[in-house]
Image 1 (cartoon, helix red, strand yellow):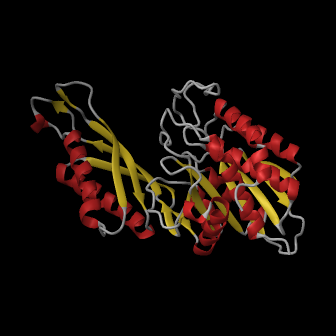
Image 2 (image 1 turned 120 degrees about the vertical axis):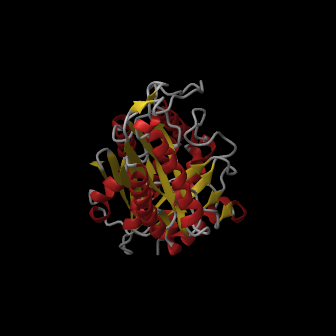
Length: 389
């Protein structure tokens, strides 16, 4: 069961769609052109129902199988949004929106799911209902959560949900995943330090927020090295530190921000608690005020065992057993498909796109060669998951 011949036949059509989406990237919750294009294509494919505006700018399509004795519904998800990055490649379909580009391959994910929808609407070789989920705002907007909160799972009766992401650095058309935690929770923090301004020649007259801030940065790293079980993953990164305007002035305030990544719910909760304790302690040590604003964003992406095994079994039939890996290491990047996996059982997999620049790089581009493989995999999730009797 390799790449489906019919999907290979409209590979050129799908490539043109992907490159059109690439040329017109849109940021999260502003995917108006993309959503309209998706809805237009779905209508031309003859799907049974199209609903727009779910999760603000999301699109959902329903395709009924030739039979519906199983009463089962499987959802397939793709993300649509781009990133605020300036593209530096000069191909014919380069971004026409200055400062915005598809630097993570969501244009490819959307196209892969459109390819699956086209084939499934033509053939309907399954017993049940397929739901195509075109999600907005994965890149920090939490569009997956917005669709779940909009009642998508209940409204369409979704029983299981699956998704995929391209994987730079992984061999072309190889599929990889793991059961359990696959991608990290992503939390973000901002810290406001209020010290006491002074002349730089008289630091004893002030409370230096830079000293307070550097103590915080170092203490946060001891959460990783001294507070958390070494066998449990955690990343604490202070990524911005803003303070001062002159070289002879001790500034009054400073601001830090950053991110915390974890793969364990208890470690995630502990990190927030420990950071607050550190902020309180260092504030008292220096006589400063330290205000921590800690925001839990995307939860851990956790693949469900039965659904992951099923997805990998399907992958072996599509790309061959030697091109499937079922025990990859977790990734410390985050993914808001995690919200859908909290709402319903399912699995998320990586599809190799070869030796290309990594995601979020200004030279990144989705590899159109993997579109038929991605579409075939999605199709077979439906046909194998809801087989005709």
